[in-house]
Length: 479
Image (cartoon, rainbow, N blue to C red; front, side, top):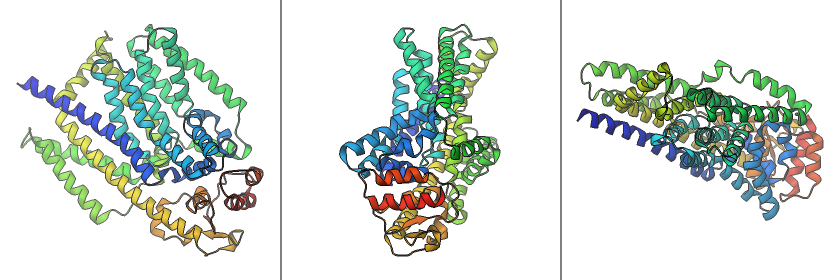
């Protein structure tokens, strides 16, 4: 009877991870398209570039190491604008292609995974549910890196040992590597995880060879397509701060860690009173504490920190991948120490399934509430930008009588601002015919050179020229 209960609890935990992971991946698409999250932060500039048909010239030639994102999301959207003449629809296509990536990645992982119980797919769902809500809404390319990582891991494990199978491994590894420079860490972690199968294993050797070839291609592309001088220093500073520990000193991370720590302590306390129901009592107390915090004390929005927490995906995704690989190798003979670790993991998972499930639910609850707060704040901030862009208020001191300061927006919404892309957002939300270009006076990062903006202004595009003229004036004032 006890063995049946453990098996039942383990299956329930597995079903919970799959259900929540798939649920999030579907919700990402619905929420993003419903609330126009393709326009949030850097997304405003990317969407504007799609609408005016200049994605490569505006920025993507500067980040040649992220060609996968360009080819899979931005280029199709730009082509759609060219064919349809509908810039708003093109932005919607970009948003759909970008935010459907986690769901597409899970579907691809399920199709490629041949492990017992589809262990890699289960961990992919868990990783999607735990990590992706941290960055959801910000158009960081690590969003696609995470989505591509999991089917790549499955293909490297179970791709056929044929020419076609080897080609698929190479293509997936290449696609992953060109989502973001941080994805090279993910690609290397796949090869390291395959080493558990043995250094002479054919799958390991094939993946290692593919990685070497991909690294050679990545270096060649970087040399052939270097960034503009303006961006070279920017990218260097960004790279130096990518792994800054201060990135994690933000509200949502502290809240998640506090939630899990309190749950763990209460679980230990209640286990002495009621071992079988301790996890329920502990989760209930933490739930009450979270509700009180959100209703009485919380005044923050997890917004701009979504960008910086892309680092969490680089650091934590390989851990999920390594655990998945360890479980997936259950049909293989492993070195004694690794095999012992695998058995200990499986035993812990089976015996602690209910407490793990409760912890997973609490983490999911935090993500849901923080996402709702973010979306509500974004909706209000976008409405405020629209009001300024279509209004008559003016701040000529910014450089032109048709400019207006974003500091006119209520301070309570400032958490949703992203200074460098506010002008592009103001053009889009005003249906590309703004009365005013909304400018953040504190901005010190300028996407377009005067020459690039002028060329776009004079070109034949699907958007009205008025908005492009304002962007040209703004760009020429600074670059």
